[in-house]
Image (tube, rainbow, N blue to C red; front, side, top):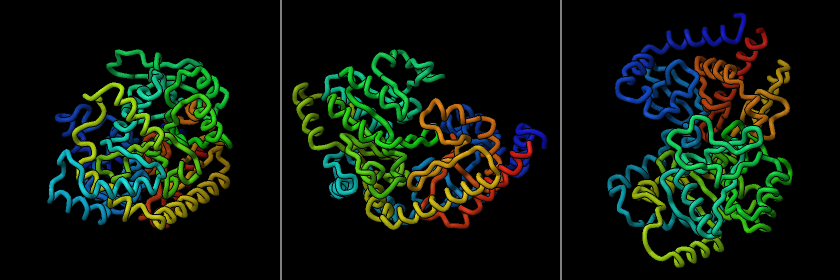
Amino acid sequence: MTSLSDCLAEQKRLFTATHPKTVALAEAAKGVWRGGVPMHWMHDWASPVPLYAERAKDATLWDVDGHAYDDFCLGDTPSMFGHGREELQRAIAAQAGQGVGFMLPTRSSLEVGQLLKDRFGLPVWQCATTASDANRAVIRWARAITRRAKILFIDGAYHGMVDDAFVVLKDGQVVHKTGLIGQVADLTQHSVVVPFNDLAALEAALRTGEIAAVMLEPVMTNCGMILPIEGYHERLRTLCDETGTLLVYDETHTLSSGFGGYVREHGLRADVLTVGKAIAGGVPAAVWGVTAEVAARMDAAQAAIGPGSSGIGTTLSGNALAIAGMKAMLSEVMTPDAYAWMQAGAESLVAKLRAVIAQHQVPWSVVHVGARAELVFAAPEPQNAAEMRRALDPHLLEALHLYLINRGVLIAPFHNMMLISPKTPPEAIDRLVAAVEGFITEYTRF
């Protein structure tokens, strides 16, 4: 092979030759699904057509062609604690036999509320169906209780299907994300964007007194992983306190950081916390929690406006099946022992990847927090989204990902995120490292 394009072409030929059932199903699906897939982002995998999953157990996934894969994507976090967990299966089966949705609380909902309070340290909680729903609700409440219209987001962030967050920085200006469909309102009028780790820009925006809330991930994970600089979160907290701005942490991905999420593990203080994806083991569910002070302000805002439809929430939110899933996950699966295994595995993965990078002298790095690691095509690692975008070479990403798929390894398709589950064996980590090293060996020949 003489180039990256040659490598990619060879990997595509290999995939097509070894996945005849997958290719046939993908062709048939064009007649029933828009673009041939149930959700458009299923096309974001590097393979010529998406893999068709047959089943998954623990940290292994099998496709319809019978290939087994070491799964480090884990559904991009919903299955972070492993596929096919018996604890979750028992809970869901038991609840399904008794009804899945009543539009009423259950005895288990009280237990789940207490589990959330104990784990994350916030006293008052509400349910949503997805993290997107939770973030939308929080934004509406933030505006209601502060009587301010603007929300501050971090450049490169992703908070689900939240209209307000579909903005980025381009040449220093806030603009709509490229390709935004059906947008009729100008989001730039009420959404403010600053770079991650830029405390001067953050302070300038907050000092205007116009910001209702800052919504961010404590560690950026959706444009490649970007760690906060020393003192970043402490200064953010101080600025929010001084300007009367709510501080909202989206822990949907950083739940992998430790037993209490990144915020609790690092001693941060949130006004509001949102969590989705893995909180019910992949059963559609999310939660958001608030401090007692925020809860009181919510009550006051609702009392002032009077009874009626708040426009927040859906019929399926907080249903009995979701509550049963959360109870099983919080009490039986997401344990300190599980996190200890995950973090030890991630540390092993990171050390081995860094050793391979050093041995082959490629200008890459590995970023790491808790059970989550990211291979970055830059060294040193980027500190904001603008730097990360320059490092995310789409052709190199595609070639690496397809090379790994053809060797029985799955990582998150959007960049190079890798998750360790409590069911991930050391042998799987070694196979991932060996596959990455194999790709680097070929890549450095070009």
